[in-house]
Length: 142
Ligand code: CO
Image 1 (cartoon, helix red, strand yellow):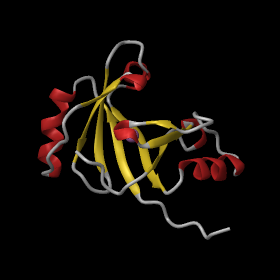
Image 2 (tube, helix red, strand yellow; image 1 turned 90 degrees about the vertical axis):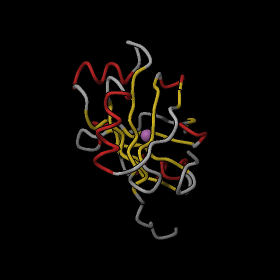
Image 3 (cartoon, protein in one colour; image 1 turned 180 degrees about the vertical axis):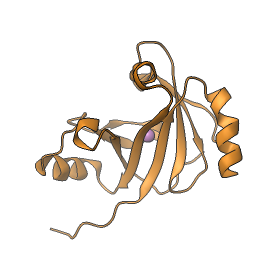
């Protein structure tokens, strides 16, 4: 087996009730421009990326009251929603981590923003933090 390479931080996602209200603050803090808003109906969110490189921010706004992000906001208020690491092969990463005893939300990869294959690890398995594994290129088209 290949030695595991250190995974780069792809993005950090923050749940907000309103992207329009939250965005100017994060643009001011980072000096970064934001991507066009994108709707991911399957996850019940609208999202925007602030910045384009490693560690950019993803702001998530729920599309309706039943979406997971809406429930997150109800329970915990706005704040850190997940941390995403970039992997060369999301299926292999998922297998490696569940074999090591970590709990996954997704048994199989699903499609995330921009058509990237993603999978989530359960927050109960990682100190209360939802962890996303995202497969693909270093920089998403904005
Ligand atoms: Co994400």
